[in-house]
Length: 263
Image (cartoon, rainbow, N blue to C red; front, side):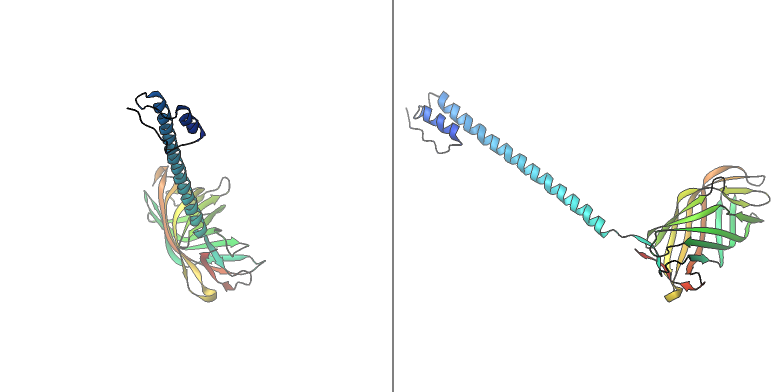
């Protein structure tokens, strides 16, 4: 039995030529019908594959755009904190602290403490800086029942503000120099090292007397030691704790505000 085959879907001009060539056909004959229907099916599959690829590409582009937007938003909202205060151009600003404390050095062979200390922070641009360098001196120190002398000549503490309430510290010494803590029976040396933490920061006071309270909780300090009381060796497990109040003065020795804030 034969029947007329009317083509309701023509994909392109090539399919039209195929349809015109074979015209009315007997489906039982087979080859011509299979040729056209196979071509149409292949083109339909190709369209489906192309659509899937386009959807995948669109999805990847959307995901990439989302990631870029998130990174940009994070960067836009990131804040930088540092030492801030009164701008006194052309004036050297000194921040210092000198009051009783109990700064403690913790070694495996004992705890040494100092009852007084002085930090002198020097900078020519006090306003809006994330880093401050300070010389340090200690007094009235003892350990293991003996007096301790602390020599910091040639070494500085370098403070890096990491947030509105925290900082890290480096010990930066000149070539051949180290911090030396000495008793009659033991000498401990602490050389240059970076990234010691943590140091808590808090703004206290108000007006021209506003200043920064610093709480030291340093760990992982590297050192060497020698002496008949402590033996000899080295380690990287020393700790240092203490507190300080840091205020600012100008060249006229007048106190000016100092604080930690966004810069």
